[in-house]
Length: 331
Image (cartoon, rainbow, N blue to C red; front, side):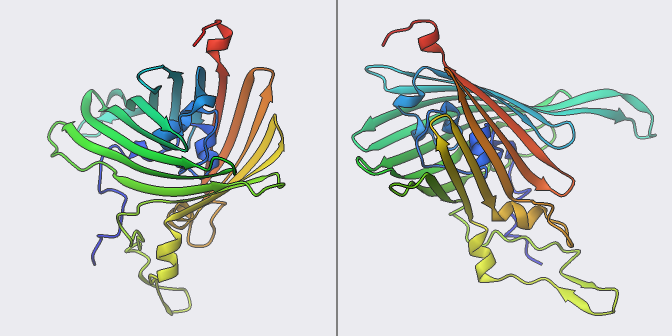
């Protein structure tokens, strides 16, 4: 059986595909359009850096399943001659594990973690913003480290009069400069994404649709243990691929209800996540995400609960503020 369609396990540094902020997680983990004041959206598309992100510092925390935790800090700053800059540092910890010798005797504990350091630069020319991110990634397992240099390239078109934008991002272009000891170099999780965001006039709703993995049409993975198994009544149950499912797995849809200037509610659906992480008899909400944005004075709080599996969900929290105003910096 060919496994060419399976996107998992074909690359290293797959933690780069995880959404590090509450807003990005609330939009289904994939979003390249819809400019906002969240500088953390540079992880979705560096071209989402805009005037509203200038001077803002965003601190995010992600509580995944088991002991996996992610902490992220992002700051955006505009300059007169060198464009708009974004700086991000993300740390992902997979927890501590017990090490054993070949005889099964414990030899202490070791940790597994990833670091991502990002520097983005964006230039806006009328309704179009073009940007790029340079990223240095490090993965460590019990003192054994792998390193990679990557770049994201993106663009956003924002309609000058209507609340409508289109974004395109080519993510994780790069090279694994140092593989793990004893391992060969592997490809990075390249992803091409295209999306649009629109807010209908006179409606308190904003819709976002994003297509991902555009370089590969068939991203359906069929579990070899489920493709031709026998049910309790003796019948054979065979999994098959359909064209509709192949197309649907490329799309993530999200919606925001704009209740007021200081209160938004969002919901999203990621079909690929649902199909890959659901159980045979239940989905447990896999693929769905719910979030809220609350502004209190100069502070902005965002929370998202994203469902990955029937065994649990991930929680994301982002706190942001314009620190340039706080410290009296002038442009």
